[in-house]
Amino acid sequence: MSEREHPDGRVELTDTSRIERSPLYNRDLAPVPVARRTWTTYNYAALWISMAHCIPTYMLAAGLLKLGMDWKQALLTILLGNTIVLIPILLNSHPGTKYGIPFPVFARAAYGTIGSNLPALMRALVACGWFGIQAWVGGEALQTLFLSLIPGWRDLLGAGFAGHKGSEWASFLLFWTLNVFIVYRGMNLLRHVENWAAPFVLVMTAVLLVWAVREADGFGPLLNPPERLSDREFWRVFPPALTAMVGFWATLSLNMPDFTRFGRSQREQAVGQAVALPTTMFVFAAMGVLITSATRVIYGEEIWDPVQLTRRFPSPAVVAISMFTAVVATLAVNIAANVVSPANDFANAFPRWIGFKTGGLITGILAILFQPWRLLADASGYIFDWLVGYSGGLGSIAGVLVVDYWLVRRRRLRLEDLYLPDGAYRHSRGWNPVAVVATLAGCALAWGGLVVQPLRPLYDYAWFVGFLAAGLIYWVGSRNAVRILGGS
Image (cartoon, rainbow, N blue to C red; front, side, top):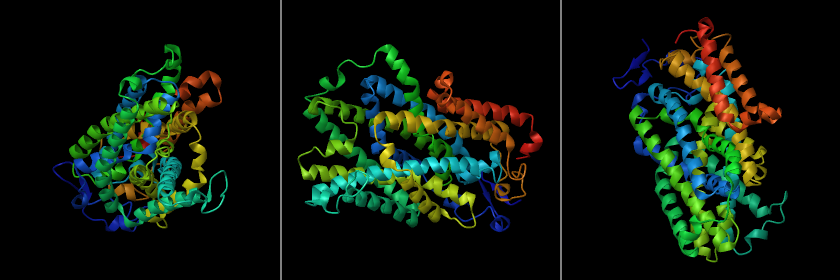
């Protein structure tokens, strides 16, 4: 036997010589030996705290206020959405810790050794878009930092193009380069960045909240806003808003094995995530809601972009400290959430030619092509078009993966066969047609409301529709296609 199962349930290969000769293998996709699975509860909690403490999270909460919700409605929507998405996150985290495998390798069990590229590349493209958004936000933070430190910085590099100064493009490219540098230094550097960034960002955001409350003369004006949405208007906005909250972390609900493959135990990764994700998102969102409410009192308008808010501070020192905090937070979350997964996904598609570092560079290049400055044009587009839009596709993939691992295979995989083109997961010439059909059907139902108006409610619940439809179709199809699915 080339596999060894430890008393704690974790599995590793005792002999990797066979898979090392396989075209489906490279060092970045290889199963992590148990001795190298060292991430603890704190590492996972710090990972989520750091990822949640970012400007897009702040803008998510502030955007709900901008759309007309009051603070209670906004926080309830955020808490509910993050509690829901925690379920597929934990379910798909399990195989990472048990087998030490990344997301694209895990997907081979359900989709086939070649078919796994379908969910992997769908996830990768969304991550590229998010990489671009975070890099643009980080570039804005750097731009504001430089404006506070360097006289005349705004016009120093010319007029620029596309409505942005040359110095803005320089700040964006500098932040982009910082991301790529960390990718080339490896995952251990990421863990150190996360451990340091998590508590630092929390403290600095709390300081900003104290300033906002003081300037607004207490919590009273913040918690008693002017007239908001009527009940009817709220229930019209709530479904897509809830879907957007789930969609915000729908990416990580697929590729958490990229991180849990380094986990020391199932309990530690599960506790770290379950404690940190919903609580951190709620607390940080509450800060964003209160600060945004304060801007209405202080400036007469709700400013949903914290970078734009910071630019109004008269003290260069305050601006510099705030933007340094924003840069650290955005850098940490961008690497963790938007580079690790697509880098592995591109490596899975071409394992002999693309490794993790090259995959990270490809991710960065595609991120620029997404033109993130357009994706962040307004709160409505950011929430309802971007977040809700892609959630339908990722929900469909999540439905297939959860049903395959927990119901069809009952948590048992043949680790070595995941790396062999002629193994148990070859299915039909490398593809599992049941998984492909289920995924495409889930996507069609989730996105149907964009083109067929009577189906619009399905789009408002895009992630839920995709997850349930694809999972059910896969479950029914797999029960009637045991020969296609193969053994596990």
